[in-house]
Length: 427
Image (cartoon, rainbow, N blue to C red; front, side, top):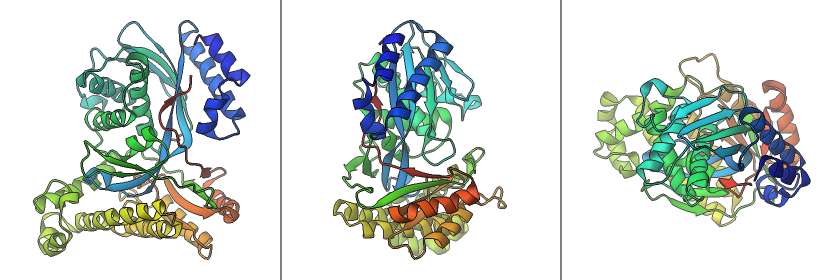
């Protein structure tokens, strides 16, 4: 649509039917957000040409903490926080992306075709890396202008970086490939992009969850062909809220912490003669511990033990949800949280042991929710900083949010909803 036509469609409510599956029935604020994004695009890049709007949700990891990168199982869900992009194709190979609150990225994707360590951990590297993945797969790419706005707050464990990668891939798909690229394929390329061009050895869960939509159980036994099982379970109908508490910590400068988890797990796997822990035998692992202590250290062994137990736990939790048995799932949430704290050890960074926002939030959550029937909590996402997660009965959610906000600031506790639509074109 043209700039004027698009604004008219948004403000008249003509797009509301498409917004409701993404944001729920209260679309007024969402409508204003889209209109503001279109206006911001016009101010940045002009009002000529045909415009398009895309949306990619953030994600919440429901269980399976640091299992995907060793070919394990996870449960994740798309949420009703998202990145919105207003875009327009260009005639050249320049990509310009202005993200609200950040400097503009300008990338020549015809020149930036190989990983560049000097640009690791930058959004420019993600833009170039997704273009490279498309080209390597025989797909078309081109230049574009984009203005993005996001309420998937950075450092939150809600996968702002994965949502951004999937968004860039979705833009290349819709502008230059008729929107025909499968969303899971875009997710796979986004992981390759993050590994090669961004320099972070992540797994595939974040990208798949952002791209796919809804609650999904994902088995990465074969990462090239992940088995995705949609889970039709409504937390709200079961009387629960999904609370994410932002402790104020940030993931910046913690890349070494994140990288250490898959590296140590794979070091254990290598000593056992396999490439990833999914291929290891549990009894073989236990028997090898005396020798492993000398070769890889105790923390690596503890992290391997976490993986083995967590992978089994996710399978059981998936079966519980598919059978409609929430109690079994929530018991697994608590067990996952304990394992992450004690064995995986990703609740705080050893770089700065004085700052332990996640530990504090978990302690306060336990105090607030002990005695609340059916409540469960755990570290959320990659850990080390950022957020925790709590499944709280609706009747207790207001008091819980008040207790968390009193410590971590007004609005620290976010009550979220599962979004059943993944990466999509709004207009």
